[in-house]
Length: 324
Ligand SMILES: NC(=O)c1ccc[n+]([C@@H]2O[C@H](COP(=O)([O-])OP(=O)(O)OC[C@H]3O[C@@H](n4cnc5c(N)ncnc54)[C@H](OP(=O)(O)O)[C@@H]3O)[C@@H](O)[C@H]2O)c1
Image 1 (spheres, helix red, strand yellow):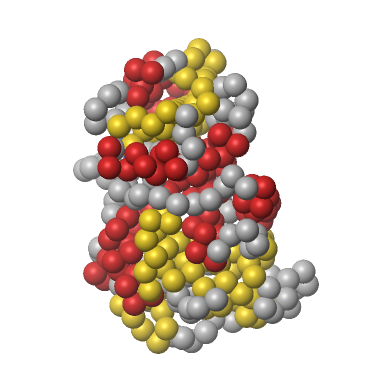
Image 2 (image 1 turned 180 degrees about the horizontal axis):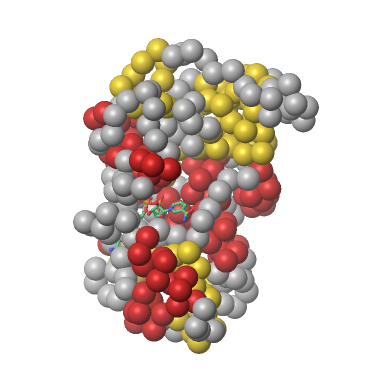
């Protein structure tokens, strides 16, 4: 099969098109014939080996195929998998080193769900990591009816889906992005869209919840814009020159969380089947639709990765691997 492989750390230029064997499924895994794979910030981190701790947690041994977010058809099932069959349309989170930037990817059964019929394969792939992070963030923020929620980075992969899910839960949502991306924030259905380069979104507080996917704002300032019992959910950020990738701010929030009535949450997201199923229900019900900013073929995967850059995504970028 054709695959985009990584054998050293670096920018998009280190990705190389190669021939690899089609993976075989483990006992509790399936192999998916990939139609589309989403490009998310995690892929960028793994490619670059940044923050540095990633090189220890997930070491690069030889060659690997990146790409967690996959949608396609089941090609082969492991011996213990009885509830999906060859040919089923699915979406899920791939297991490295056999990720989604390839014609076939390996996926654990408990990281896989049936693709909602309402979504294209590109849309389903775009939901896997970013959609689960948005779902977990909105739940942690308790962003339900009547609550005022601010989403920072609201035009990004996670942010624009968090806007949609919080609105679907009945919250009143303010979304902040840079000016040229405000159309994505509006398309996501935000009640109010703010260009953070022109006006400070924190000045619109107090908010009942803030979901931060890229704000680079100081913890102190975020907390000031939060109601006394409000929730702050730190999803992630890409601060320039910070070798810990914003981890220091998240750890400070966890520590301060013990001494305040505000809920300060450092989000750690994953993509279990029940979360994917919940996203599928939202998609079938109507409101959840990822904004696909660009769709590029496998041999232009490096370009797709360069588009999202480091924390500069606009909606979602998807790599189209094979025809449906
Ligand atoms: N905790 C978890 O489990 C988890 C899961 C998924 C993702 N993440 C992390 O969450 C972060 C967002 O991921 P993503 O996939 O949504 O990335 P993304 O698609 O690149 O979106 C990030 C957004 O942040 C905005 N942004 C950048 N600098 C900003 C600033 N100074 N003020 C306000 N907004 C700013 C960007 O828009 P502008 O260019 O317009 O500013 C961009 O739209 C990443 O750090 C990622 O690693 C964490």
